[in-house]
Every structure is written in structure tokens, then in C-alpha cells.
Length: 306
Length: 328
Image (cartoon, rainbow over all chains, first blue to last red; front, side, top):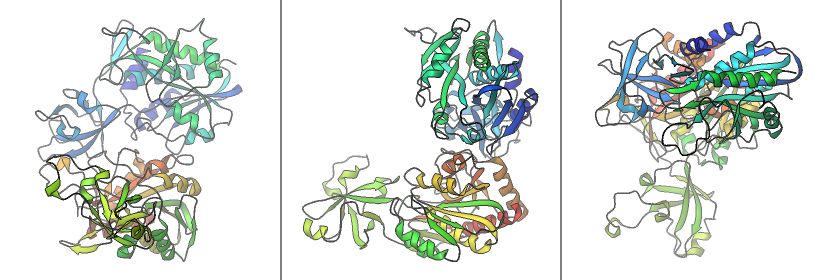
């Protein structure tokens, strides 16, 4: 699992510039039938029996885009999916291998006050820049930038590679970081498809929190609702029937997940959302547990059994 | 043509006048008006189905009250900076009643740095009392900035509503130049109040690719720091790779940059992710539509005096024309 996370984290997955991760996923899921929608969302189909299910996660991760290169060579940027105020001091890299670090003008904190120092002028306007923090493992935990995103992707990949019998689609959404994304792929799937979203969940098992709702190591989070989704009750009940063999934590999330978009699209769909608990969610160094990723994959596989 | 398009009233939700004008300009082609008030035009030619979209609505005002003394109260429609509109001339309703946005005289105001609230302002149409005002203005009437059209400086143009009548004018020009292609034009309604019309237009057309033709933030007034200058007037059409409503399609962007480089047309990238356009709604419509944005840098957006460079305008027409020819 750790190797899978390392591989995922080494690919460029900036929104709209996902060719690198797309190629990797195509290779990884080559035993499945791969299709793309108009937004290049990847749909891997495993033909099977019974009513279809789609397991959906984001393909892209929070990223930076070069907006301007100063005459001095310092490079300005805009962010998507990450708070620029948290980036000072971090290393970044371009797809051509150039490495740099982020800093901010003195006593300022606007995004336009921040810059990347690549040492030489190798960046191009509109190009993505990636946070250069490879994940690292300590016991059962993995930490790193966007680890919650990679953990969700890893759980979906694990379930896709499992030898199951149900007709299943494994969907990796393109350009999902903006919050609103194209649900065009749903029109390529059968009308009666059930959707299971896999995302990251806020874990609050750290000092200062009086009531720990979701903890790293607690298993997979089953979202009872989030900011945009009221999940399908029948699918929640079905998930809970697996709680004897899978560790499941019920969660009411304040996040704006991907499920709401799916639920309201294509005339409405049955949707639930699962989360891999991540400590320090949306911060620079998210931390997840390998066991939780495995539990998430295990629950997905339960849904894939006919 | 641009002067006529900019001069027409068309505050979001009340685009009738500008739509009628554009419809007349496109009368040689198949046109329809959908339920949202979008004007849709099709050439029915061959090749890829390409949607060009520009919004025809403008920011403005809606009359919300008539005082006993004949002064009008109003609400803004779309994103308007209250500080910008004080003392500006407007025209109200179908009768085009002239009015002036007023506020308590500076001598009577308390010293306060904050901008006035909307309800401190009023529109003065010179009426003596409520009856006189009610004879020419109704509650719910729309008001727009008074038309103005001035060429100045180094081939610059100032007008109301260049956002996005300049885009509409570009579309009509592309229609003339590329009538043999399979073009769909959407002059969209209600962009300024949440990009509402575009989704419906895109759903109706379901094109292979879409290009949103817009105006965009230009703050090159005091360019001490180019990083804080999202675009510059006169440096060519603007390509957006990220904004608040969309992550435009990279392949479409690249095809546009290729055309620009091949034909030596200047272009610039937007150096900020602020702002939003119809591209978000269009790209998510139907089964997902590869969509990009190409825009004119425009000073003083959402004000009575938006400013563009006519060089940029001509380069934008050229870029889209050649891009349409390049992509077949």
C-alpha cells in the first residue's frame, strides 16, 4: 500500500494537467476496459453481474499554477485546493524536474505576495508546480502533502484490482478540486448505477479536541451527510450490514464532498460517500493510516460482491 | 456595430433590447430565443460543432421603491461597487427615463472612510412627487448606465457594458467570417447573476468544443508590480487557465496558443485565478464540454466606463477566426 501511495504521489495530478496520473492509472488498471468522458475523467469498467455500481474518487490533487515570472526570475503562482498562507517555506518542483521553494514578501500574506525561487528561470506561465514532499512512513501511518487524496485513490485502485463479480465502474474524476466538476461520465453509465464516493475525512484525534469523532486508525468513515450530500439511506444501511467484518465509523462531515454533485446530476442518483480519515486535513502534511485505507478498500469490495 | 450593441440596455433578466438588436444582426441565420432569454444562432455548416458564447447582459439596477418626494430607491443587479456609481447617469425602463444616482451632499456626511450603503443612495429623475415619478417609472423597472462611446488615447475605447458586448460583437464578426462552419452562437442571458443562461444554451447545443468570449480584469493602472496586474491593455487577447468557476481545457488552450504563435498574434495569460465566466456552466453541461476562455483585458469592469484596446479587440477577432480555420 505504501508503494502504491508513493507511486501516486510521484505523478503530476494538477487539475487540468492530469496526463501523468492518467497514464499511470491506465497502466495500473489495464486489465479493465478504460474509457474517458469529454473532460477526460477516467472510467475503468469491470464487466460483471447484478446491478452496476460506480466507485468514484478525484484524479487531481491540490496544486499550484505559475501565473507570472518576474524579470529577476522569481515566479508567482495561484493555488487551487490549498490555502496559500500555508505554503511558505515549502519545496516545489516542476514537471521538468526543476526544484524550488516558496516564500513570501516581508510582512505580507496575499497570494500575489508569494513567490517561488527556482534559482533559474525554468518555469513557464500556466504550468503546474507540485509540492515536493514525498510521503513518508512511520509505523502504520503515512504523512505527506495531499495524502488524504492519494489514500482515497489507493483504496479505489485496490478495490478495482480485486477479483469481484459485480458489474463495476471505477471512476477517477478530472478537475475535481474546484468543487464543481463535470458529471458527464454518468451519462455513459447505466441509469440504475449506484455511486460510492471515496474521499478524505477530517480526523480530529489530536491534543485539544474534547470529543474525538473521527480518528486515524478507526477504520473507514461512512458519511451520514456532508455539506452537499444527503446520502442514500438504503446504501448506508447496506454498508452498515458489513460492520461486523469492516471497521466503520459514522461521520457527519462539514466538508463539501463530491457526492452532492453526483446525487443531483443525470436526473438523480443513489450516492453514498466513504472517507479515509486524515489528520491535519487540507494542511500541508496530511496523515493517514494504512489500515484505514485497507478497511476502506475492504468495504468497497463488500459492495462489489454479488 | 459595437457602439449600437453597447448602447442597448440589457441588465440581467431584461435582455430584450440587446437581444432584439443581435437577432437582427444575425437575421440571415437560424435563430431562436430559449426560455432563459438566451439568443441561439446556428449556421448548420460542416465539421466540428463549435460553440462560441458571449453574455449579452450587463450589470445595472432594479427599481425597488418610489419615495413620496419622487426619488427612486434601487437595488443593484450583478456585482457593482457602490462607490463607483455615485453621481452617475442612468436610464430607466422602456421609456428610457434619465436619472442621476445621488447621495447626501458631502458637506452633510459624517467623516467616515467606509463606502456608503446601497440604501443611502437614490435615483433622481427630477420628479416633484410620487405621482409624477410613478407616471414614468414602475417598481421592478430596470435601470442601466447611460450609453457612452468614446475613442481615446492609443486606440482605446470607453463605453458602458463592454463586458460583454465586446464579446457579442466579436461573435457577430466570427459569424460573418465563418458562416460555412458548424458554428453555434450563444448570446447568453443572466451571466452577471450567476452564469445562469449559459448552462441551458450549452445543454441545447451539446457542442464538441466551446469557447467563451469575454472581457476580463485589467488592473494595469499603476503597474508597479506586474504580478498584481492580471492582464495589460494592448498586450493581446487573454487566455485563462484557472478561475473561480472553471479549470479550462488544456488542449483547447494549447490549440489557441498554437494558432496565436503561428500567426504572430499577441496573447497573454491571466495572472490571477479571480473572477468567473460562463465557461464553468458550459463545461459541466451535457456530457461535459471541452471549454476554454479567451478574453479582452478591460479596465473599470462593472462601471459606466469600461475600457478596452481596439488593438486587442481586432486581435481577438483574428485569433478566433484563424483558430476556427485551424481546428477545422
